[in-house]
Amino acid sequence: MAGDTRKQQLLELFTSITNKKAIVEPMRKVHGTLRDRDAVEREIALIMREILDQGYFKTKLAPRQLARLVVAYYDGKNDTEIARALGDEKLSKTVARARVRLKLFRELDFKMPFDQSMMAELLDSGKTMKEISEELNVSPSTLREYRHVIEQQRDTTLDPYLERIRDVMEDRDLSEQMTRGVTDDGLSEAIDIAEAIDMGEF
Image 1 (cartoon, rainbow, N blue to C red):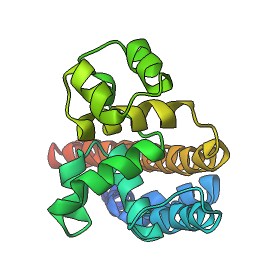
Image 2 (tube, rainbow, N blue to C red):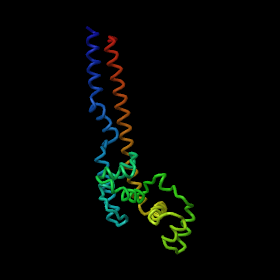
Image 3 (cartoon, one colour):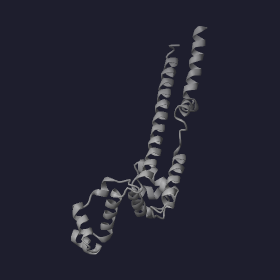
Image 4 (cartoon, one colour):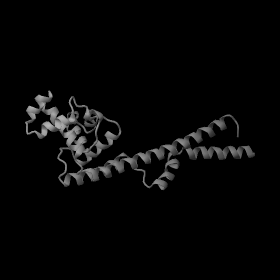
């Protein structure tokens, strides 16, 4: 009889642990609100609207699209994949320029077929972009992209806003890690109980 009672208690515990709400809800109290992707995008979109309203940033992308770009970048998506997520693969160049303006650099951005200091000297020399591109043996459009990367790397105008965006993303990552940790621990415990019941240990 005592064994049946113990088994019933374990079954109830198993049900409780495998109930997702039972696992996640305590974390809401610990960490505040566990924000989903949509909430994170909304928060970043508000910061983007501030940037655009201040005139610091010219782009055809809307604040919500820029927010989606940021989240997708942190998720490891390339520019074409981000453009596709925004609904138009042809936006990949627009995405790339916006990404660089937001200092969301990729290693590829700095892989230039010439020394950066040489490009800087030539840009300061008063020569035209066409002349410089011929001297460096790259197309004028490619040269403009490289110049854009260097200029944005040095520009600190958006830094306070970008710091706020990083905080939002870091908070999202922390929320996901905490939830995943609790969920994993809970499911692991539930599996142990289920196996114990199946083996007739209780």
